Image (cartoon, rainbow, N blue to C red):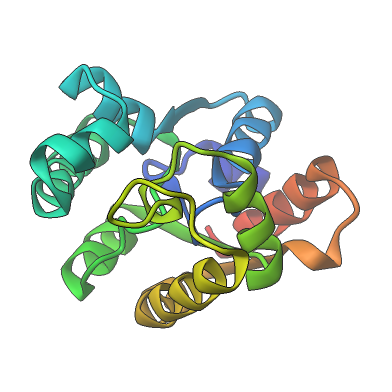
Length: 187
């Protein structure tokens, strides 16, 4: 296989997918298996802004968050080689997709929306989980909002060079092994 070409690859692997899809989990496993560094874009934003994402959204709004997300992603793409887990909404426009594909490989981690809804409902740090009064939304309302949001972003996710369907694998290890095989074939 193209192990030698992978070792000489100068770009990064950018993992995209919807919120709660497991991008960071897969990214950490890929980094471990490839002996590469790992960065989670959401963690980078939180460290640089000295706030959790939920508070950034509440204090400054989504527009500010997206500007900072783009700024820090540009820094990562310029200064870092490794595995980068993107936020679920990082692929907001074609410019972002094109930039990442020029600077590395885009890998889409696809997870069924019903599973995403379960995962989002279990954790209370995601802004979309709450209504305007700060109350947790019903499962049905959450599903419908996630579905609409996913449908807006799907056209960007689907442009990834590598696609991993989580429902086809039994473990994160198996998913990472398949992803590495696909990456090797791509570089």
